[in-house]
Length: 284
Length: 273
Image (cartoon, rainbow over all chains, first blue to last red; front, side, top):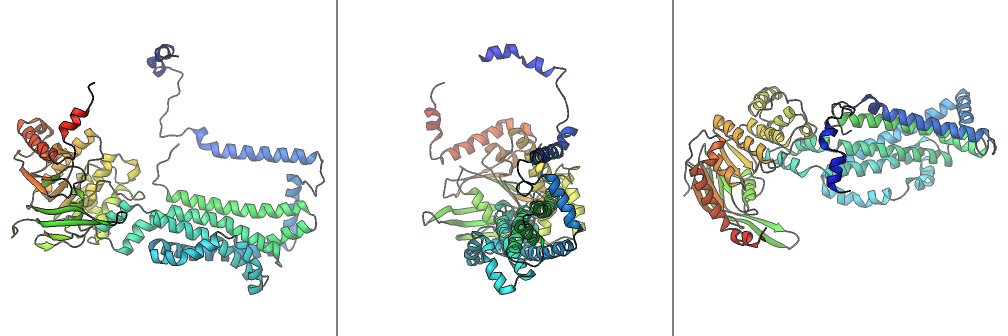
């Protein structure tokens, strides 16, 4: 179709005065758009669970081989009625809190130092690269020898898991500071401390929080794997025992607990991230 | 000897860069002699890459000079100081700070004012640059022209002896640029701060300045000085004044001699339409 023809079919003036065309302000997202993430997310999950339930109900396979969501839910309820579950949760929770907490603090400090002082980076880069490119769970046997099968060995694995993504992202955040901003700070005679506090640190926050978020995944992996291998208590241990005793629904219930924890922590961090991004104009 | 009455004195200023890639010394500026008189608005124009911005950075104290002397009120310039404030080509605003927070940043970095005093004065300054009502807006919500107003207000709030402006309107569209020139003159006439304005825009230089200095091509040095005897206050109509056009011709001639490819050849090279 030539351009001329197109003009004749859809003259610009007619389109603009088309009364059926929706008109609204760009600044105010429509109600439906605002709830889209929740609606679509929920519907897709419900759909998935429904299909899973239907397939499981067909009982082509045994419960051991293919438990349905309802079986898992029942196992979860039963799990919480048992006496040991609270000890398991407390154990895993403490391991996670201490290990991840240490990872945040030390990762943040090392990341900032490595980003700010090139020489620190040169000195520590080999170690960071070595550990980051190695799945940290391979150190579990050694940690068990060093710290025993109780909490300290789990904390060590969780700590190592969370540490490196946090270091690397924090460092990247500092390194990515806009050179123009640093020039402005220098031009106005800002001290290093002020430049760090007012320019570099706030600019790095999105990177740092991304590091925290990635760290959660690594921390949970470390927790579960360490408990699978050897532990007296803990959710990972629940999963391990359930798996070894062919209680598939119970095993999946444990998985749900772990995944739920991960999702909860990630959501909280996502919220914090959004709070720090208030200055970024919404694009939607 | 340099003139004692000068605000800024540059004598045989040489600026060199070490180029890592070619492992050689690159001379950006070689032997700049100029003076900025107190209360004067001096503009430097020159072919692109002539080292005018580099020279300004040296005046701000961001880069060292390899030779000559650079003095402000008779004192050698060694580092950035409270007596100078730069308005940058790129606004360089902290995106997570509001307009008010950004305007304060300069004095905050200098540590010269209490937070309360700074906020109070910044509010006045924001009004002066025409951003009243936008105190709580974030830079990304502002247009380029408005961002440059913040940039200007930040520098003005530090109340410097000398204002350094590095092509502050170069990235703006033609209309906004003219408007900003007009406003800059308005603000400048209220404070009469000594100012050094770098630009590649000849019209802009003539319109704003008391004197226009033309730099040679790299390594840059002063080629000639044009005294602009247009009466103030100037409005934008002055740009069509015959005297203005004479200045423009003179400066354009001067710059053109410095271009690597003469303008005639550029025009001759354009195929007939």
